[in-house]
Image (tube, rainbow, N blue to C red):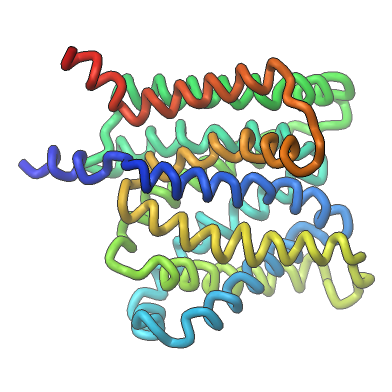
Length: 312
């Protein structure tokens, strides 16, 4: 009876599109931060530092407001599960994969997240059912991501295929599946303030990753990372994670799992545009074509253009 109202409440507005674009911009640099840091810091230690520093920063920001301690006490099991599937598992898988796979190819594989989210949300929810528009939009966006990054990333892969093991290619895909599960499960936190949800899941995942990093990496025996790796870790923790997850849960509370997962389609073009604007990199025809395909996919998922055509 109330499905139409729920569907209407999840339609993207200009404000939510702007927030999604900002999140894509913030997360656009995370793969490159990770690529710099993982060359000097083992993957599990890097995950712990990213999550732990982000959790600490959010607790300092919140300072006991928004009922955070009551939420942590009453919903700790939910935060543990959310931290596992939204932070610990996917971050570890992506960082482990990036020890063998370049940032561009990792971003392509991670961009399958909306496809997995559509499938999972269709099975697990009543208000985000599968439709031709959702599948078509996700596939268009994924095709645009491949075109956007594919020429260099995939050429590098096949140019030295023996050096890229299958497990390294599968890990970012499994991370995308985990993100799809998290996007659907995260709907249950709609009643909480976004900083509380972000701090809760990051606190839980930090506690999970601490013994893993200690046992596997023995970080106290490692040399101090150079300044570029330290700055990359701070960028990952404070910008891409602490602030990024506040935006993530704010968007999810407004427009649902599938729409929020579209951010992974915006990450690769954001990274390329940042390079063009600040690093003097050039835009190639494939870049423009890939961005156009991604824009078309997002337009199909948004649905407003199709509704206007039907009305006409």
